[in-house]
Length: 614
Image (cartoon, rainbow, N blue to C red; front, side, top):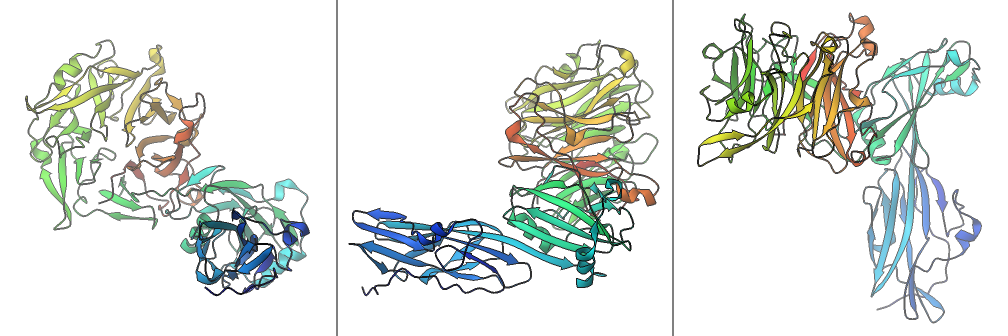
């Protein structure tokens, strides 16, 4: 093959409006020295032959809205003291096509995303690499702002009084978010006389983007949010707010940090109940809640609905004095939920749990039922299509509970793996809850194994094992209810509070099933110690990530917009759970929760259920 012999020379770079920091060319580099640029890097050698890429490193700053630059690299083969240009003969590739895409002839097109990519050249057993570093910067002007707004900030003097600075209210410090949800709403107090603000997102060496806005709140648009997440995945992003007003003083907030991780939530829809009636579906990506066809009449016990893990079944309680339960099943042909069990033919009920593995066992619904006359609260195993009893030894399980604890049994959860159930038990006669809530005052949380026995045609339940017991002091009136089991069955989230849902303090705690089973108070689910707001009704995202698990909860935690809407309503918040921290004793694996964007301030969003995508 024909190879032209060339001297090592500067690199020709095709770029558009970008900062040039190419090593090996006559342009300098902010992160390297002159000697770095002058000294070739011999990447690979075989015998007397070697191969290197010129330049060995290239750095660019890409401006949002501008054309992403194209870089040109050369491949040089060394032999017998001479170098040949083999750019057209090598095979080019990139370690990170998200950042830079390599093509034949040493052409590398940047995508406009920040990050690092290793450019690789291969030729007849020789390999060489070069590094490309890309940073994203830029300014965006929202409606009502422009370059004159930027000039106001440039002319202003930095204000000296800390009390005049803006204060970021949301998101909370340290939140962790997946990349495929609608961006969180950023809300801050104005600070001093500010009437214009500059919102800055910053990650050193990766990202420096500012938005100008005339209002003390904003929701980054989907394109910008995607750019922020892809430019610095899994890295803490620093958020600051600067304000300027007629006094021509500029005030800067203390920073907040949030992390957009690379792991996606694979199930973007959450079922929930509302104070307007019916079960609805909240789309995390769009930030919208829509009715679910076939559930509009199921508006009785708010929070008494249950969805199956695959989202094909719903149980609910009708708005009557007795509160009879009913079920619906999804029809793909309709598409909608069609009635299955009519509430009029059932006993009064509350929250239940569907058997998750209908491929290997009959359909079954473990339902809370009650009799107000005898103040009996128990569990029944029924067919969700007919309401008929399903064969089991459930009665033996309940009889095995210590009568000193009480055999009033409520609010079960069936593990997604199908291997066990979790439920709460208390004494309804001593600590009544009927008519107030399906809680378990002074209750104990139990776990029991379960299996389907085909030969006997029944479900067999193992002995109850206490997971969480209330304080010895009866006056404490602690309840442990609302268990939710993670997709792999490793973690149980549950609500711990005092006496009833109207109690002073309510938080979501975690238990590691196969470890020491010590309940862990997590910051992501902690209620206010003074009782100003509560966290409850946890539900897990149905897919297990490599590092992150996601826990959605309902909370009346105050949000800035509540001030103009009659106070806080129960709304949906999500906390990221770091699975790598679960094995470290006394380390909280959770991160502060974030408020799901798109919820209406005057509406309640309660009892979230997170089914697998259909």
